[in-house]
Image (cartoon, rainbow, N blue to C red; front, top):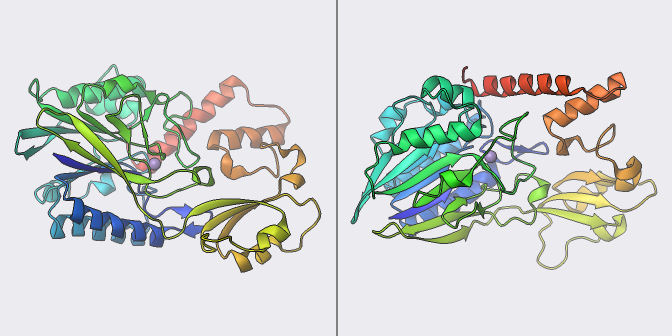
Length: 384
Ligand SMILES: [Mn+2]
């Protein structure tokens, strides 16, 4: 069984004011080609297909084009689960019809959730799709009264999905979750504002392969067969050193797996430049592209007129400029700090402190976390 695992496409993403749809189309073109050449038996997409619950039409068209070509040109079945950025109801439109065409869209959580079975010459492999779901939803829909946090909710989901699988059968799990100990980037939205939101890697151990989504850096979580494919592109300037890739998994008849990560080449890289204004204006060195998405950190202390305008004459896609020498103490909180690096909760607590002169109490902090979580849930249009 050959499995191609990819995740966190975030179609429709806006990066520092720039739509990335063209860049996403560029790498998805390579992905389609890979699907044609590697001839996997199945493609797994583990959540955050779109960047938000109501994606722009360009993003919808891109997903339509990509999935249509994979399914119609190459006849490769696709199993896709929703992540915390997706709306399960919108993405789940027509899911029963499309399942007949081997496009398995799994978003809405119901007690009818069950493994998707795909056969190879050795027999069946059971694919257990666990879409992202907040604990209250798992409690209500599965139902699973013990699902009081993300850890218990994942355990309930996995137990439910595993129940129909015969002993000794080969099995794969798909999940959108934050496995404890995983390495975060700045472009993931936290799954839980108040608590940790993490789940234990041990839940995924019994599977022959665990295809994970949520963390944007490709990585294994504990064991070699428990893996994050990582995001399609670099979605923040904290990811400049990442090598984005998709994961090709080969499983034999006994369920033993081997792995290969395959890099996709972006149209523009995401890079950081640090130095003095005149040195940076000298332009790219050999082999570097001036069209990359660039964040510039200037070490100059004196005034510079229209620094970003001048930099853009050399690097047209400078998206962010930092001048740490002009920011008092380089402190991240308070006015003048880079708000893009703060979480919603941190932003609010900083705002509150600035306005009232006193920091948030623990009680206020907790109340705000609850409201924020409720807001995220509403954005995904899922109750309760
Ligand atoms: Mn994501």
